[in-house]
Length: 60
Image (cartoon, rainbow, N blue to C red):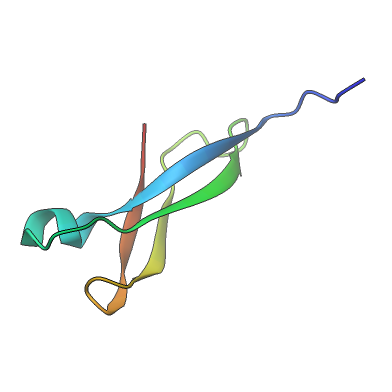
C-alpha cells in the first residue's frame, strides 16, 4: 500500500523575467513538505533566457 505523505510538487517561476518582458519563461519543478513549509518557496535558480541566477517563486 502506498504511503501518504505531506510532500507536494510545486512549480517555481522566475520573477525578473515576467517584469522584463523577455520571451519564454523559466520554470522549475520541485517538492516541499507542506506541513513544515506553509509559505511559498523562494529559491535562487539559473534562468537560461536571461543567462544569470534570478529569484524564482512558487506559483499555484
